[in-house]
Image 1: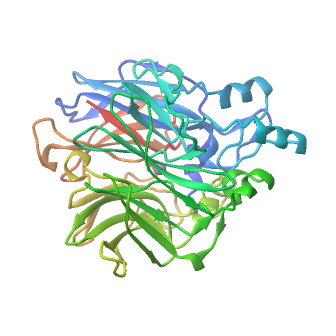
Image 2 (image 1 turned 90 degrees about the horizontal axis):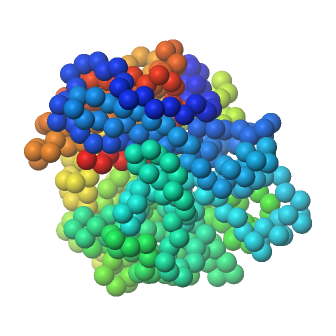
Length: 466
Ligand code: CO
């Protein structure tokens, strides 16, 4: 059962393999690059990082075209990694790891903060650059062909924040990026920022004071609104400075506060609705849209925030059952001040959710794809496809293998799912290799695969660019 632990071992070898061996019926129309991000080194010297989210960022590219697939992987050369390798020990604080620091060092770091630039979570485009993202507002640009690190993108503005989501939204018509940030301080604030498609300057669309900021990994966006889902995992900002604990361990689970949704109008930043409902926790918004005077918001939820501890490396590498994935839950948020409601859309468990973004984003839609659980207690061991209308699901699995986030790629000439595919990097611990799976989106069956000569540690998010 614990074969999946191979996915939490270091991969330090950087390779370029121009022609991966292919099997199956490789779609000849499939052309573009899948770029994926995730941690690949979980220790420095004799020090271990604590959490899956803390390992050094590595980029993986699959360039697909003319019936061939080339693969390349490369560490992101961040300050966080460089300083650690030079010192032979962990230097910068990560999500759930804090370097051993004297009181003096801690006080100095308050005056001269060195937030992590270990951008291991996601990739996106920013001002014509490809960038890697984590939860600090420090995007790291890289060359999409060579995966060479270009460097930190300095925003050309004076917006001050310490935390940012690694899941910005891109507005379909304008290409404008919307992001959510937190400024921690004597008076902390939430910020919603807009970034034009050809610029690296953030404009503050909305900001408002908050005494105990909550941990939010992602947020929702419809045509007209931005939705903040404030799970009751809250922090006293002074604890971040003074307690000397890793970042996330300063947050407290306070279920009595419930989950508070704020609906903010994109055009003027005005809060048009605020409502509170039962406590829950989530990392990932799936999709959101407006319908009949309400905002419908689909999110992968957990009963509480214990999933964060359950994704610590000690726990994941132990013989304890793996934590499993979440529930696809639909929240209906009335815009007229009424009571919100929610219900679970399917019995099928899911995480790392993706949709057919070009067709479904911010619109009523049919289907969510993600990773899920087939064998109780195993790490995510299957891919799932859930119909949001009736909760029916289909699954793909290959015994003993562990698939990652499925990225939807639509046929360039098709406007429905029929000809489209999903791309997922699957770990095969027995073969000590990973492979790129091409799954038919409609039948949810394997179409082809390309085998990589090494095992790729479990990653988080990726994007396909045609
Ligand atoms: Co995420």
